[in-house]
Image (cartoon, rainbow, N blue to C red; front, top):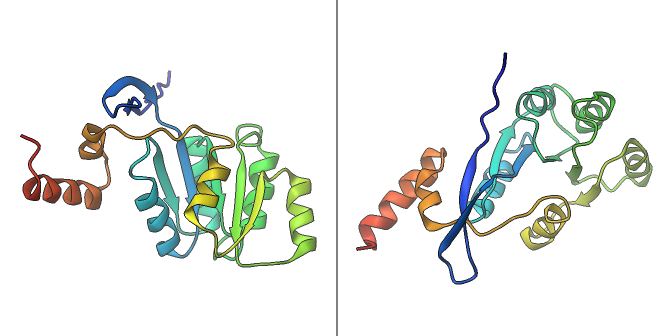
Length: 174
């Protein structure tokens, strides 16, 4: 017998007060450039979402199998499993084939783009991409709601926890 732990978060209402608990959408970022994954984590820290990362293709595929994310963002040029191979594997596997995949790459290859669209990717974005554009693409598939202030302190990312603790020291909430 297996059990599934669903991460939940309080989301803010329009007036900024927490109003309900909802399951967090899970986002998997597969990129061998740690700055890309870290940037995504930082940009999404104010939203009720859980971000997982993988630094190479085969690890990204494994993380997709284990975490069953709601959406995947992947690069193409990576060690130990290129992004196009990862997409092929994801789309062949019944447990991952319906997960939307956004390719985020520096490659401007139209033939590769057509091939990946034929496999079923949701979007092909060429770097550099603004966070607003990426967030807009993510919101086509998942709901990104503002995170309640209390949730920022409960995040599992130690860097963000430290940042939040320091912010509370500088600006106590009374």
